[in-house]
Each structure stands twice: as C-alpha cells, then as structure tokens.
Image (cartoon, rainbow, N blue to C red; front, top):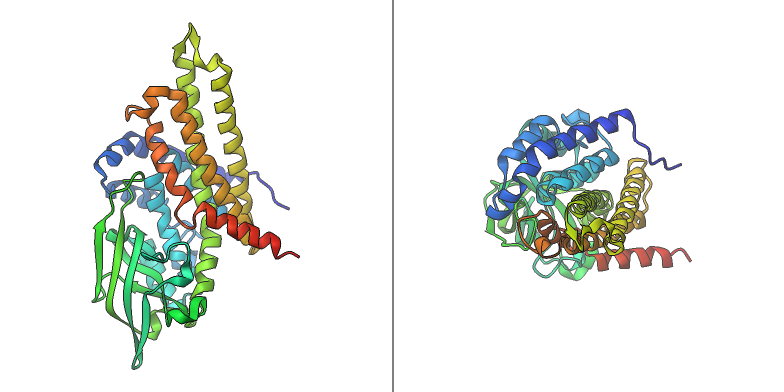
Length: 381
C-alpha cells in the first residue's frame, strides 16, 4: 500500500539538498537568470556533493537510489531555481533510455562516464515538427552496409551545448509511424554532429536549450538502443519514469510561492494592517497550500509506483499535468499578492512566474497529458 511518509535516509537527502539550495543556488539564481549564463560551477558543486545521477545503479558508480528519492531532491532544487533543477535532473532523463534498454556494454560506457565526471547527457527526442507527436519525427536512420547513417534535426534539447553524449530517437521510415522509431546513443564528438544557437527563452534562462543537428552521422549496431523499430516504447517508458520528477519540481516552485507570499503578506501593510489580514490574500495563500500538498502527494505516488515496477502511465501523467497547472496558478497568485512589486525583478516571484510556464510544455504539454489520462480511463472499458 502507498505510504507517503519518508525514511530517515530520505529525510537526510531532503536536508542535504535543501542546505545546498539555500546556500549555493538561491543567492545566485537571480544573477544567472539575468545573464542567461549556464552555471557550471554550481553543477560541479552539485556533482561533488552527490546531487547528480543519484538514480544510476551502483554497479556503474551511481547511488542506486529510487525515483522517489530523486523526486524529493528535485523538489528542493526547484525551490531555489527551476532552471538549475532542470539541468541537473536532465542527466536522469538522458540516462533513462540506457537504463531501460541499454546493453551492458552501453551502460558500462555511458553510465559510468556520468558518475566518473561532472558531464551532461541530453535527451534528443523533439523536432521542429514533432514535439508532442513523437511518431511524426523525421530524423532518419538509414542502413549503410554493416552500419547506419543518422540525419536530422532535434529541437528544444536541454543541456545540448554542454552534453558529452546524446540518447535519442530516429525513424527507419516516416511511413511506419511509431513502428519505425528506433533509439540510439552517440557521443557528442562523433563526426557530423553540430549544435545550434542557444535559444532566448521567457524563463528557465540558466538552463540552456539548443538544436542538435545530425548530418550523415555514422552509427554501428552497438550504438542502437534496443531493437530497431522498438524505440517508441522506450521513449514512452522514459516519460512514464521522468514525469514524476517534473511534478516534484512543480511542488518545489509552489512551496516557494507560498513561502515568499506568506512572508511578504505579513510585512506589507495596506489600510492600516498587514495584507495577510485581508481575506482575499488569505484565500490565494490557502490555494497555494492546497496546491503544494496535492502535488507532493501525486508525485510521491507516481514515483512510488515507478520504484515498484507498477506500470500506470496515468499516474505520472496526472502528477505532471496537475503539478504544472497548479505551479502556473500559484506563481500567478504570488505575483498578485506582491502587486506591482511582484511584476518587477526586485522580488523572486517574477522569475518563478516565468519559469513555471515551461512545466506545462516540456516532456509532454498539459493538453497531451489530458489526452493520455482520458485514453487510459476510456480503455478500461
């Protein structure tokens, strides 16, 4: 039975990550957002402290922690800065296809690389005309003698400019739809791989997003993940296992909105009393509290199921969709609590407001999540 309580070890993870967030991330989050700088020194510090790659198996140098453990850490990191949390957690996303379908040789090479050095792995799935519709991708894999040739363009790839390797997907033939999708893993330095310009984004500016271009890149059978034509199922299982972490980040952002709003409401006075005494303000803060508690429980349950091998796509989709929508609502209300000050960069809620919007878009939009949820309900008969 699902148990939402945390063990002593999990509480220690929370405490360690919370301390790192408070002392290292929060003091500089505004600076990196303003400069749109990728904060390598923070990522290296997170790596040295053991806050990256926590779910990689111990056999490859990881901590072998569970999805719930990773989610608890993601919440704390996102409390400080969603962009920094996204880039740290994206290593988990990039490693998941290897953990799901990689050969022992692939795991030994790439997962061990991640645990030995402070490097990044990027997940290359989305394309200019294939974001939500994964089966519509046009990046092609062609047979070339005993090997393969990879050509195409990937878009919105987190950490692409700093990635040491990519896990991704291409199609054997667009006419095959999802049955042609094939997974691959390839190092950044392979001939024919180039990185596009860094995107100028509304929010999450400290996390870099770029195109990845594959131009006649040579692959071997040893570079493929799983069987040719089975990549769609790897991609979908990857999302099932990664979406709880997005919901966890949403929980962190919601809690930050609640804390900042509560603190400000007790200090700011109107009509001769703190605005915290006005019912209109109290209602918005109460909504944030409800949003946080529900999101925390949803991501915990979704992660709990992943850790026990329970394949229920709907749980991860509900957690991700609800968490993202509530994060945007909470950030909107936080700006409202702060009034005109909330619309300025003097206070952190303006940044959270911009950062939150991405949670409704990446790794499947909120509309796609609703389609997934409805499909799973309707198929029950």
